[in-house]
Length: 203
Image 1 (spheres, rainbow, N blue to C red):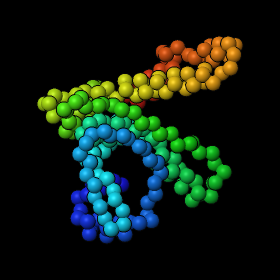
Image 2 (spheres, one colour):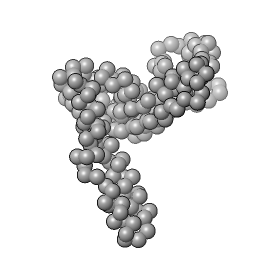
Image 3 (cartoon, rainbow, N blue to C red):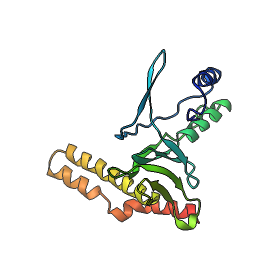
Image 4 (cartoon, rainbow, N blue to C red):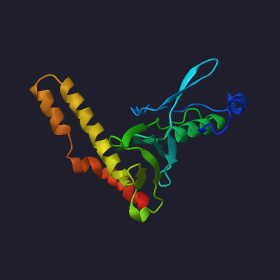
């Protein structure tokens, strides 16, 4: 579980000693942030960089969290915790031969602050009638509304087209390239499964 340095350095080290070995990393995501203002915290053993950020748990999607810094908000969708829990339960039951789903993690940018603007806070609406939206308050005094479903659709579409483009670039000969192009489905067909999942979740 993330801690946001509420405790002192001494208490932090004590808690780390007590909890060491009781948890495990199940997934990691790297989010680049060009915002200046990161401060270094030096200890006797290592140097770490601390950035002001907040983790917003999504109330409408159990596998989604939003990481907010001063300059951007990134959305992370991962089933790593659920898959790890299933693996542990399977081992406890002695059913090691059971086929389990693989870990799927996706990260995309939901909002980026303009120059001379800082993100002060963010939250996700719990009202399903408004849709799956994220609200961000900026230092300029405005509130940005982000449609999370729309940004997810754009990310999924970009990744699908990127994979097809790489496959096309790796193909040799006109016939192979033509076969790859013929296998590319229209955009509405690519988005239909995602639309169905959202519709089932809201119904």
